[in-house]
Image (tube, rainbow, N blue to C red; front, side, top):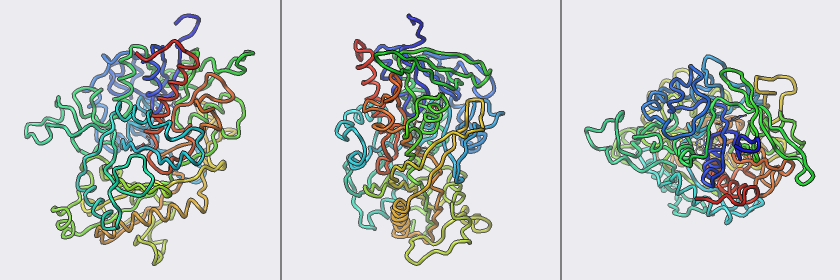
Length: 575
Ligand SMILES: Cc1cc2nc3c(=O)[nH]c(=O)nc-3n(C[C@H](O)[C@H](O)[C@H](O)COP(=O)(O)OP(=O)(O)OC[C@H]3O[C@@H](n4cnc5c(N)ncnc54)[C@H](O)[C@@H]3O)c2cc1C
């Protein structure tokens, strides 16, 4: 680059939002440098991504290698998903080192992954739009303005109506029995059930072919093998992998522009500013620490896009000493996720499904949903048994099940952690279990969010402290929605129903800690620091009413890239 700049735009983080912004900017001919804290799987320049430092950067789709990705992503639950040592953890590529610490005040946990692809590496790829009503509450831009950007991402990922397997058939049967109706709306204003809009390619045409060879297949499409959360690697090349994490969608699209350079294992520890009369304070450069060697470098760009996710984006702002703002790190929403599960009798399953088991591990991790504007959303899910048992039996704010008395008006039979003989019995029945995950519409509160521990640091700066307290009104909404999910299981014929009752500070949908209209202007440019834009879940203005957040973040990132180009690179046009 000329003029002492390393790039036109630096993007911090290659996850759900950052990869989208990079692709959009690269397509306008702008030189983009992505700095990503975690490893890069499926790239020949890092043949052993967890055991050796590999190269510094990659700029080309030629480096991507599906066979390597297939050896990196193993289907083994611990290997992939363990929060401490798994490949999809919040920590450095070198798994002999511990994860990067966070302090969660009330004892929940943060479920997030470092690496090219970010947390979309393990996401289910459910891609619903926000509820329009959520935009009417606090957003400074209208839902209508978002629609073309939604359409753009839906076509690009692409998003398709999911294919149901037995767990969805059973869920839809229960939903009908409850009196709910199918909805074919995508801009949802009233309750209804539907197949998920998923960022997963259509069914692989070779699926029913007896010669189908999973390892060497050249056909494109989803095989319904049920490992979305362990890292999908089904496809003849990286860019055609069925589940559209940004690793296999927006990153290859970004590389294809020839303008995007990506450096994994590069943790940004500070954003630096300059000052001039015209702009006041503006972002000018970043400090980066190589997570293998500890080498420190500085990179300069004309614009910086912060896409480090809803915990690290405010952490980096605060660690960089950027101006005080009463909303930086504040307003965290989590959807207060909870799970319920029901176990069915073989005979009932035969009558409903024509088979004696639910086989919850088969198919896409979630292929149907119930939307309930005003309360949130819930969806059936099934994963490999270890992850499922953790989610439905091993995570609770209520202690063990035998410590809790269920009230008559509650639709579940027990709540809390299931252990001992009962756990063994329930897991023996895993094949006959239907699980539902519930996302409730939590309101923004300035009390909830991310601050820095004043003393404890890791190699990247002061450690983030996450605090989240549920309000009485939100608890009521959550209980109501969980009650509906439990009732659905009963109506479908479940003989016994358990509620996990997750701590509401378990963060998997982590949102709204750098809110549009509060920390940024309506273009997602920081109001106090010019040339610093935000493009990740943190810039969402609220929890969207309950729908899974990534599609909205990505749609907003497309819009933000457009605004960056208009303001700072007016001659840059999309090819
Ligand atoms: C089990 C699970 C299932 C999910 N399923 C769905 C789903 O079906 N649909 C849906 O919409 N959402 C789902 N989500 C949530 C989804 O993963 C997130 O909404 C999405 O990934 C958020 O995008 P982001 O850009 O905000 O953050 P991330 O995707 O987490 O990306 C942030 C990136 O920034 C990097 N980074 C952080 N700090 C720095 C730094 N200082 N320097 C350099 N790089 C940095 C990180 O390593 C990471 O790669 C799921 C989450 C979980 C845990």
